[in-house]
Length: 169
Image: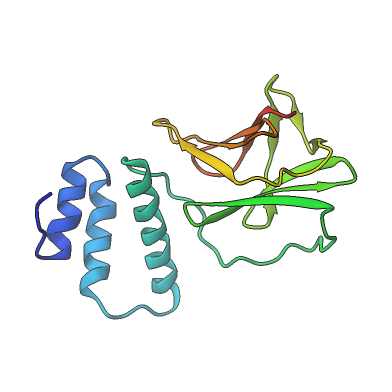
């Protein structure tokens, strides 16, 4: 690995390696040279840094995702059981209430499909798994999350906007 003297050269090298898009790398280099991080500019810097970290995890340019302050959803009922994993700074949570489960990202439920491509608002689940999740990143940008030995597997879309329920015990 070569030593990089300045941020602009580092972001250029990441572009050369195919890990960042050129326009994204230019914005990151400009942010690193600036000391003004207020208001709307701070949110754009946050978006760019979020995308940078996800690109480094994937080893390829990551899609831009909404980057807003996390605002708790209005539904404040507590789940009977829950399991969560942090992926690229996003909190992915599987919550079970009364034998039905939903999946949310940053506290917002996301659309789900079953392996049969049927769209669902919840799915049958006796309890959330008590074990730690295994996270597998695919070259396509899909993130597969598996809870063993519960045999629960989900696939998150690259933009974290939807999830496919691959298997449920």
